[in-house]
Amino acid sequence: MGSTKLLLRPNPLPSVIFSPPIHSLFAKPKFIAPVTLSTFSTAAISAASGNHQSSLPYGPSLFKGKTPPTLKQQQDQQENETKAFIDETHFTRIFDIAALRVPAKDCYALESRLRGHLLNWPRVRNIARVLGDEIETQFVKLLGNNNDGSHGGNEDFSGVVGDEVNSVLFREELVKSFDARGFVKFRNLARISRLRRKKRKEKKEGKEGNGRKGELYVVEVVEEERKEMSGLLGDEFRGGEKWRGSTRLLLLDEELVDKNVEEFPEAIKVLLEQDTRENTTPTLELVKCRLTLFYDYWLMNEILEALLPKGMIIPSAFETVGHIAHLNLREEHQPFKYLIAKVVLDKNKPKIQTVVNKIDAIHIDYRTMQLEVLAGNNSLVTMLVENGLRFNVDLATVYWNSKLATERQRLLSGFNFKDVVCDVFAGVGPISIPAAKIVKRVYANDLNPYAVDYLERNSVLNKLEKKIEVFNMDGRRFIDAMFASQKAHKITQVVMNLPNDATEFLDAFRGIYRDRPEDVKFTFPKTHVYGFSKARDPEFDFHERIRIALAEVAVNVEMRRVRLVAPGKWMLFASFVLPESVVFARRSPNT
Image 1 (tube, rainbow, N blue to C red):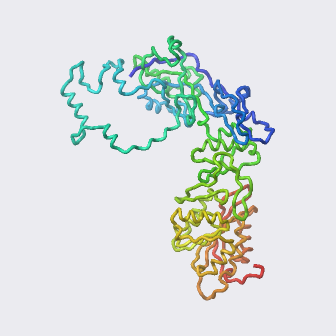
Image 2: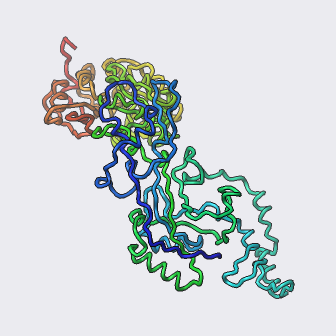
Image 3: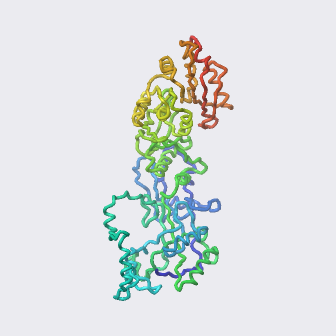
């Protein structure tokens, strides 16, 4: 292994230069049209102030580092103004850092030894390759290593002395080429006979280049001393340098970049002194490096924090439905909605392919939402997987809420194989289809014909169509039809998952057994109802509405809060067994 000189520079390394905040240019938006980064000029960015050093935490930030000397200029002015365009080069940051150049074989041991004094930035490895010093293993034997006194010939046979071969050592080496059964190890033949494995996706790691798509960062050694022949033979010429073997860079703490070697931590100084003492030619070298972070390195929140005006809430949370990201932007986000959607799409590919925003309240009859496509393709038809089951949905015509997956699983945990479930507001089947895997029979109903169509598709998709019977009618009419039929005595569970209006349908249960003899034993179904409440005491308010709808005071209700859907607005779950006085009651004339 070749060795390198120990470079101890008395002068400090260059310090990190801070760049201006991007959001300073957005401080006072004067228009509502979509804002694009293509309106920025390089001069405007470099001219803004950058006095954020005292408030910035340790680690990488878009408000730190240097911007590249040559940023992209103004993009094509014919860019569609209704869509966002982000010039990714504006998010490139360059940091000057110190590094230890060490032999490749020792890098992991030294990394463990200096763990607390390394860079330790997220998504940046503390060990970086040195571009240009890698060499194939088969050529290392030809180059040899004169530092340890070995010859530069074939090192596989230690018994080779000049042209003479020791027969005993040759035989021992030859034995290694046979396996335990005496067959020659044909390594290449074995590779051909095996099935081709799928190539693993390359990790997003810095490589030599100019920031191509998918690269997170690049680490480069800053060459201060240029060779005399480099001007004649080109900048790529590296002649005259003694090959030192494969090396790696240990990226040091960012706080060490502007310090002298005497100010380094004791662990690093002891390591350098030990290397100087043990090796005639030191193998460790302190070098200056340039770390370039590209657009793909920064997280979604970091990009949005730089784009949006200072003090604005970062819309970092969104609901995922298959390949669709569902945003619920505030009024203050509307001027920047296309930029926000573009960042969400870029930072969540390939899982997210479409970004939408809700622009209107949920339609009362069919529970559909008015959605606006902000980025990606315009298709709102997607497939998602929940609890091992597949669902096809079209957000333009049906309703789906992924946030209730845990709540649905909690409800299903109370069912058993003897139950017969009646789902009054089934939708596309988020409760009916998984329930069909547990219970004996499911009767699913929904008023929305599009939801009924997808419910039938999803039941076939999950091979549960034989256990689900689908209906398309109003909820009150469905309750009357089910309990007036011969199926009534079999129903043990009733689910009413329509939080906005479910309590208004409870009066349909009054007198469902009024035409049946009271002396016959019936199993009264257990009813599960969801609802919203904005009252100060939401449980009392929801319980009171249930009692009013059933016209019964003595109703034993089990209740819990599901989630807070808006400030001061709770979604609640109530479960109760229909009282005998309700199911045998005589209906009033107005019902």
